[in-house]
Image (cartoon, rainbow, N blue to C red):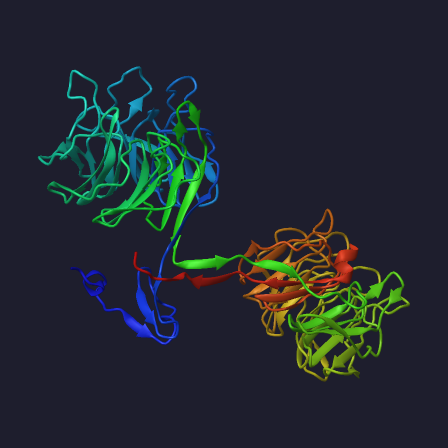
Length: 619
């Protein structure tokens, strides 16, 4: 009897709790604390992908991978069996139309990559039912006809590359043998028949792997008889592999001889949504496609961890559906916003600093006037704190709940002030002033290493000034590249980000990085942006809320120092808040203009990833 060590090459180990974070799929161990056998199990799923440019299409061929795929040929089915010569590239999100095949066709197979693909055999655009021997190669730009297969066929099993491929099986109408067991090899120039033949003559299955390590999976032995047979080719001969769980034809697939995934196929519904994975010995059922269909295409250079299914049909109904298969040992919990505590007296354009469970909220304004109130937040509720020494409306801030600093802003009489106020966790005290008074200013850093950038002097003109604070004095630094106010700013004094703002004439989406000396342009924000909140660092930050141009939004975008990515949406749209916390745990407190935004707070929890550990039981 086989043991775990025979199969995996190592014994089951014992740990006080769970295995190390680098545990791999299939690994098992004994958890002494729980007194249970534990293991890492992959999570498989299909998710909706992009829509092809050609619309509803079936029986096309595929090449490439899930994030660099190529789909070509096929039939749209209206009128009956209409062949197309379309080809299109997939980037993991959207399809882009490419140059057409020289010969329109369907019921054929492909192999290779997005920039070096092959399409061979198929029904071409003539009235012939014999299939075709035509072969074309794609170089990432255009298709070129090359030397033909040794006979006219459709529904072949194709595997390999544009320089070394193998084609097996296929169908040719009588009086020639209808279903063939023929094997042909491609050397980069010519096709030649080889002595090896399939054990079961067949067509309309799927070929995967390479010329010297290929699979011929399932298909028709003779219509309407479908087979579940798998055969393996070593470059010399075919041998029997494991039988699939569900016999079917006109399916999609990809992978290698020891790791292949197949999906869809007819007859529908018995095989149309089925997914199976081959490990070089046996087939295992996996998660079903969302759309049951046959005549589905796969990106043939994909893997059992990341596959792509496109098009297909169920009888007279043709589909444009694209689905992406992912297998991962990680459980991903999506980012989210949740309601936090309500403020005692919500204000707009107040200063906020600290972290999600230990924050300060002070100043700002309401319809009744400018405020000097301050409140502290413990992650659950707000408490009244000691008042500011002077109003801080449209000001900026930096620091923690026990060591913060607020600076700039607009006094009750209007204009711009240069006030600096420090907070020690209990009381506010006056610090040395900014060199230049500004309001709607950006701020980040700590009480002893703060950064003030942009803002506006009286007149809403926008400023490019930046100043550094060392806990005692402000020193002018190098200017922003774009003068603006109403920016949002996050990070530290030596690695900060300033995003969005208003130049005076217009709102902008400009983003700049500060390295402690100079400002440089960075990737622009996805929209124009003013009066937004932000949190985190230059390489792990997020921006939320704000006036996005046509009005206030509830969006969040994360930032990794290079690119922006959409994240969770807040319950209440608005802006006019600074925000505080980290890229993983942030706080949006008060703001406006909606009352729900002014009175309350929301807490952000970033996306998390954990290994999928399960209890292993006997059955």
